[in-house]
Image (cartoon, rainbow, N blue to C red; front, top):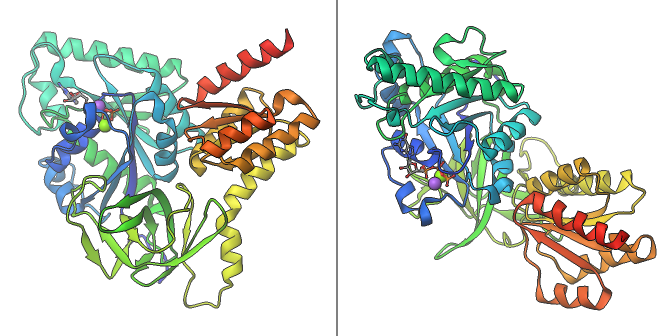
Length: 461
Ligand code: GTP
Ligand code: MG
Ligand code: NA
């Protein structure tokens, strides 16, 4: 089964941006669902995943399919929703590491906001291609709506004043993007999709611009990303979340990017305390156009091809690290389970090694909730010039505190744990008191820097 441009997998698209710009609402509009109004406080606090089949994409592109002569070659789009609230940069980081392509949503009435800029930085550092949805165009003064219309047609019929407000707000955003060092252009004026990021005006309420954004996602997937989205049999799978579901026990939500996963397959994952080897008991998915995080009646499968968001039921999932790879021994070739176990733990051990090598093993102890957030934390500490001696993935246990306390022998200030998005266990807290180890915890990564620098300034007085 060789890779061929005749068989593409669904591309994985991550939707990111500042809080309340309309990310979830945009997906609701395409799905014709109402997930957003069911969210506590109208705020997304988890990663969501839903599958948009090719026929839905064709239907929602409407008149653009014929006008632009579009053939949908991808089986669909697997779209990952992320929270925009500043506390969840770890989830944005995890979502953006998984995707082939991203949408950054900007509120046309607000322009660029802090988490817009954070999202742009994440995507650019990972070299992930993206488009920008300029959302809430229906809020422009005097906007006249025809539901689900392609944006260009909508713009043509707007009153003069509305059109000029649109032009001026769009140029304002283009200017702000230029200040971030980003070349962008309204998508219908864009002549070079490799050099210029496309701005696609949308409304998640009226559906205007939705045909345009789906068209862009489909075309970018099929034209610019063919190499990446050619289907291949080798399993490429990442754990998103591990959670207990009533009636199912501990489950792992995974994104299967490539290959096929079957019931009964042996799987190998990175665990907090060593590799986890288990077997797939059940393979579940929500129905197409339904959200993984919304409780539904799941569909049961014998086997699933990527790309797809899947809920796996299996034994021993409790200690699995979110963000880690999920490896499947390839049955056609003899394999060595020990090698896979080492492989699956290697991201964690490499992070640990890289972090401690730089400073001759003298520095703070860094701990975070997932592989992705640990990576983000280490990157942040590096740019903040805070040296790191050792790392782990949380919660904070006694043994973390004991390791951190070793720094009392070298440089006492570094007998400190910087913890991002993890809990402190009772025995961990007790041990910290006993061994005089300071623990700074934060849900927002840069608060750690503030706490630690304030503390260092205090020490040096
Ligand atoms: P977080 O996930 O919490 O970051 O927010 P979000 O980006 O998913 O935004 P959400 O979908 O929760 O929408 C926020 C608010 O804006 C809701 O009240 C929506 O109804 C409203 N909204 C979203 N899109 C549009 C739009 O295109 N037009 C108008 N008028 N309102 C919108
Ligand atoms: Mg949301
Ligand atoms: Na919201």
